[in-house]
Amino acid sequence: MNMKKHSKGPLSGLRVADFTWIGAGSYTTKILSDFGAEVIKVESSKSLDPLRNTAPFFQGKPGINRSGYFADRNSNKKSIVLDLKKEKAQEIARALISKSDVVANNFSPGTMDKLGLGYEQVSQDHKSLVYLSMSMQGSTGPHSHYVGFGLTIAALSGIQFLSGAADRPPVGTGTNYPDHVPNPCHAAFALLSAIYYQRKTGKGQFIDFSQTEPSISLIGTSLIDSSVNERIEKRMDNDNLESAPRGAYPCRDGRTIAIAIYSDQQWADLDNLLNISTKLESRDWHSNKVRMDYRKELDAVISKITIDFDAQFLQNLLQSKSIPSGVASNIAELVETDPQLNHRKHWIKLNHSEMGKTIYNAPPIRLSRTNLNMENSAPLLGEHTDEVCMNLLGMSKSEVQFLREQDIFI
Image (cartoon, rainbow, N blue to C red):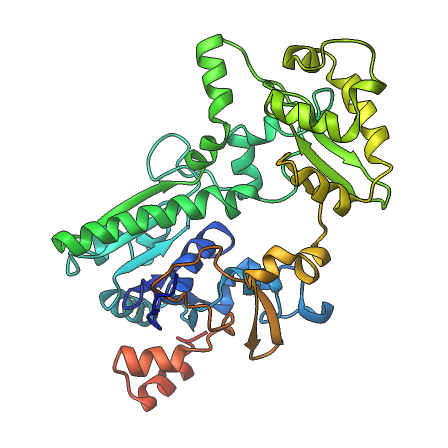
């Protein structure tokens, strides 16, 4: 396939006034910016995005422009600073909104209204505005003003309850998983749907987004099991209710390989390659029910077999027979030696004003006719304040300087 690509991303021409911070909101608008939208992040040193002070820091040295976490969530964006507690700053924010297609925030309900930037306040003269509000549990209801982060959302949505070993307390996912997958992806889809409607009708709308609800979608089978069978699913570690073997097994080189068998044919192929059943008690191991009933015995024997192999060799061997398997890679291996990621040019180095050349995830999607817009690193705090105020909002250099002296841009 050889198609000529357009140099600009598919969302080129879309402008987003981005009031989001921390994880889920910032990742949502990052998706838009990586696909070509102009995303202008509104920040303030007086109420700093916590990610700017979150490790890891470049070369281990803390600084508001040195966080790798912040950089990864804010590539391709512009940054302006406004002290939104001041009336003039709110006026400038409204001017920015008037020239934007989308507004996004992930504050608690009512926060933007207190600043004079709520949907009802800014949409009166901007009927086509798409306005995303990403609160933890939506804008209405008895818990709508509860606050929290990915960890608390994972707890409220049932993810924590199902994570870990059956005989131990919940352990969670090791990261704020809702911030990284279900919430930004659902929010970006909601925005694109509203933008499509905006382009068709000229009308905007308010998107009331509850971050807890998309996270619940991750436990759909457990919900069905509860509602249909009146059974509360327990924590299962690496177990599966449908098939065996399924687990993470040790290898000779100290690494681990995950193997997940979902059909009798896959089991037969695995057994033929590793001669597993010859080391087990005589049972009908070709029966998935038998494998499920004796899966602990099965896992123990497989572990004694895999320990004689190097992990990468074993993965290649199993994959040659289409047996689902994968080495548990560490971060250095992902970045430096993973042949598939290197082939797809997943890792991109962009020049950052303070950190120099640093690594970023490319968008995990390739479009045949349009380039994606992974061109600029994350912005310094307030890096584009002058540019946005003068070039977009029509302010003079002297006016910007005067307002800076009034601590509007802080």
